[in-house]
Image 1 (tube, one colour):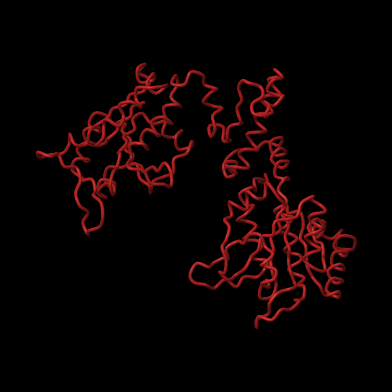
Image 2 (image 1 turned 180 degrees about the horizontal axis):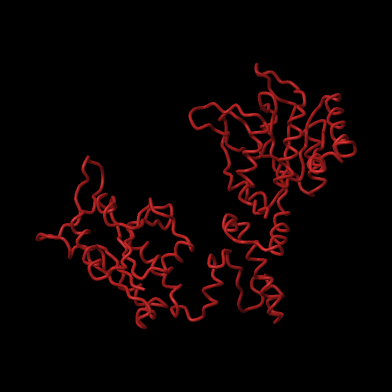
Length: 432
């Protein structure tokens, strides 16, 4: 593997290319790194490589002529040169991309600075653009070193033991398990007993399980690309069972169109669709808060029909879902029931279609899901009253449309969108 780096700061690479495994790999000839000074391809007394952008604006832009000459000189000597521009608008670097790059024979890395490179260079010479993350650094030099190190690790012989590479985070598709060394006890924390057992099979099983758990909690999206076997799926399901999410549907106190406090009627369709949502996303329950006795009786009749009556045999799948419905006279009763089941008062997660308050992120709610039971509180009619919202601990941002402020969704639609945002990342099951 050969790397050619085009930069205006060749001295940046002097130390990194001499130390550690990278330095040893270069000494052994396993990889070759060529650093080219872009100024060597510029003309004139001052070797100018940048100029002001047409149209005005801040910063400078790399001129096309020096870059074109540098790339052409490399391509003249190497037909396999794959030209990469390191840019924030490029493909996000991940292990899958690193593995594809490792199959190339010659990577050319353009280290941009200032406002970037002339667009005509990108169009005519660049094969691929890569970003190392959604943040800003001084230039492409640090990004090029990242690529060189990541790709070099996959070159045979660079890392001493092949299994060391295969067991790294991202190589297996999972984050790495926690590591320990001597002493056995430090600041009151002990090394897990299984790691001291000498039973290599149990140690491997433990490490795999912990890797799955760490990945689920910190980077669950990685598991979307990981082909889970049946035993692994059981572990995932076991870990996800720690998340305790409830859906509260309030019929009182809610507003009507005139902002008057009312108790709304229960819609049959709401019960069916919310129950099916809860079963699909593995919620702990759908709690209907309905103060009107006749309405509560209707809900119980419906439940009995689908759980014990004709509906139970007619549609067993609907029976599964309807079982998740419970009805309460007020919000306080629903909260106490969650506390009774889970041993902890639920965090109330409020929803409101109007932008009135500070919102918490979906990522923050996912963190909370690992620590406490959560009740996603939804209102009927024209939304939850202020007295309910004042009891909520956190608030989700309203669901906005693409074009304007119109966001008059049914409670069923809103629930489906919120649940997909929160839990869709944990949905790994695929029917064969």
